[in-house]
Each structure stands twice: as C-alpha cells, then as structure tokens.
Length: 328
Image (cartoon, rainbow, N blue to C red):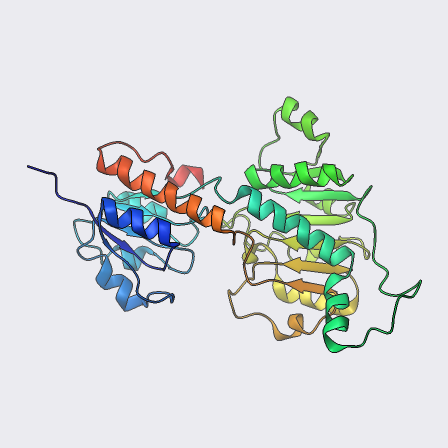
C-alpha cells in the first residue's frame, strides 16, 4: 500500500516550476491569487495541514501556532530569514522549522552593489531628469557623483551575503571592513583583505559606505539607531538589502533631509510597505520594493530547497535547512 501524501499548504503564489513539482510530490493546496493570506485564512490552513509553507509576509507567531492542529509538524519557510516565525514556540509544540539559506546570496549581493552604485553615482536623479524631458545636454559639472574605487566599505554582518558583497566590492576596488558577531577565520579574512572592527561605533565613524547585511533579531533591532547614524561621516552613504528593522527609519530620514548623511539605498523598510512619506520625497535616496532576491533563478532555487526540506522530513529525516532557536 502506498504511503499517504503529506498535506502541504502554500501561502503565496510561487514560480510555476515550483508549484508543479510540489503538486507532483504532495497533497498541496496552492494559492489562487498572489495576495497574502489573511490571519483567519492562515489559522484555518494550519488546522489540518502536515506542512505549512509561509513567506516573509506571513506572521507565524505564538498565537497562530497555538491554533495549529495536531498534524502540523513542519513549517518550511520560503525565504532565508525566519524573523516572521516564532521558532521557539514551534519547537515547544514539536513543530520543526526550516528555511532556504544560500539561494538568494548572489542575487542580494548583486542588488547591494547596484544600490551602492546608484546612490554614489546619482542614477535616480539622472533617470528622473530624462523621464521628465529636462535634460539639456552634457555639462562638465552636471550630476557629479563619486567614484567607489578606493572607498571604504563597512559591512555590518559578514555571513554568506556579506561575504558575497565583499567579493564584488573588492572587484570594484573598494577597501573591505566589517563588523560581525564573530570574527572570521584568519584565512577567510585574508581572502577579502578585510579589516575587522570589534566596535561597530568605531567602524561606522570611518566608513564611506555602510552595507547592512545582518538578519533582524532582538539584538539587531535599530542597531543603526539615531546615535550611531550620527557617527557616520557627512559624505557617507548607507545601503540596506537585509531587514528594515535594523535601521531607525525616522532617524535616517531626518539626517538625510538635514544633509548629515550623503545618501541611502534601501530595498527593505522598518514597517514593511508603510514607508515614511518624507523619505519618498528625497533626491538622495534610492528606494526599491524589496526586490533584492527577485530573480527567476533565485526564486526557483528557493522552491527547490523548500521541496528538499519537506521531502527529507517526509522520509523520516531531519530537514537539511532546519532552524533551531540557538541559531538565532
């Protein structure tokens, strides 16, 4: 007798190849339209599912997990971050949590470099001028930006993505500096010719560009707060392709408006889609709609990791990308 298929609920539309493979392997309930599930829909979905496949737009907190049926045994997150999931409560309930690390590394690092270039070379201002039809021709002093070669890049969070950013930045001739919970092995550090700063304050005060590449945890919330942002040089820029909560967005907005910071490139925001309207008005800011991981290749690879995690679990083994509270 064949084994009964796992009941899997997917909360958002995923690329077609991923949905097709999920349908081949599991008793899967797919999303009809590309909108987030409501709280009520999520609550209903986990009552009789074996596996939930949420995304960053789904808040799977203690209250929601408490409504799960006895069958729910795996939350296979479609995304590298798990700050949308109460991992500790899930573990207490005997529910495993997995994620998709590494799938987005290169895509996010590419976007980080794109933002660094866009801000320092004032690309949005040039684009706006062209779209308005205001360009009167080349001029020696028009839209003068800055060269990134030789500039000091301070990477906050030297994990997979931080290191991928460092590799790219070195190719552009930037000097690599970093702050991390743990110092890299000497050999890895030498491969980037990187300078480690135990004190984040000291690093921030000396950098030309700050790149946020750390996850959002209780210890990184507002890590770049008003006091620390004030340490930045007036001609420095900051980019964030990680999590919006790491930067105090209101403080950043005030400093950008006052000219205390040269510019910013943001792909993520502290309050999701509720972005400070004063931030939108600034010419020295590049704002993107959380598209750092938006490549077809990356999104399919994420789906493949989700499938491997579910299949491994279904075969009675530990999912290769299991997340436990001690990792956070």
